[in-house]
Amino acid sequence: MINFNGDLLSKNSFFLNHENRGLRYGDALFETIRVVNGKVFFWEDHYLRLMASMRILRMEIPMTFTMEYLEEQIMAAVTANSLENSPVRVRLTVFRNNGGLYLPLTNDVSYFIEANALESPFFVLNKNTYEVELFKDFYVNPDMLSTLKTNNKLIHVVGSVFAEENGYQNCLLLNSEKMVVEALNGNLFLVKGNHIKTPPIKDGCLNGIIRKKLVGILGALEQYTIEESHISPFELQKADELFITNAIVGIQPISNYRKKEYSTVVAMDLLGKLNATARLG
Image (cartoon, rainbow, N blue to C red; front, top):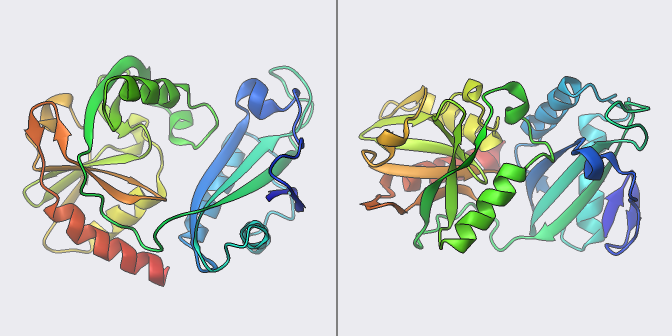
């Protein structure tokens, strides 16, 4: 079942048409959210990011779009799929309503919510081989639009095809200034000793929820230092660890980049702290 503007519809319903602006122009935003046993992980952060993104794209925010209302709609979709006692991956998509060419006829919006089962209620560290490579066919622009979770993800789509064709589990993206900004599906962290770096938002990386949480966690720990600064491709092979973060996986360690193999000591330590934060928050 899918929640479309508060109505629960079967997944094979034709509730969008050829005039949909998300399809035509990528005029849409989305949040990918983890829900476990009825608890929406980091919901306030997701909600505030969505509201800020809608304002940036000049979408009209409905009066009904309160935290409580949207959480209720998320849980309605979860319950309609009989997943209220399960770990769930939820996607909340908001798009400008039909009409117009590049210039919309209205800034009013609609939404739909999907819910699909996950395997684990906790963030779990994947220790399987996870090899990455730089994707250099196209570059991310270091601007505010690149930091939003919009439906304009062609670089990520083509990069995913490149990774699949070449036997990689993921790719790292560069911005137009040739700095490493993120992975195809999440933010990047680099570990050297007890010092940890992640690209700054101004470099064009996604303003990720788990990125934000880990920066906060690391800032409160005496054994690590955290820095938001440029990451050059030359730094990658000098690192002790590299890992990717997103709201569904949590922390995904990178095992190999070119001839370098990485450890997972810090990633494992931080995963426990992230799980604890998710349970509390």
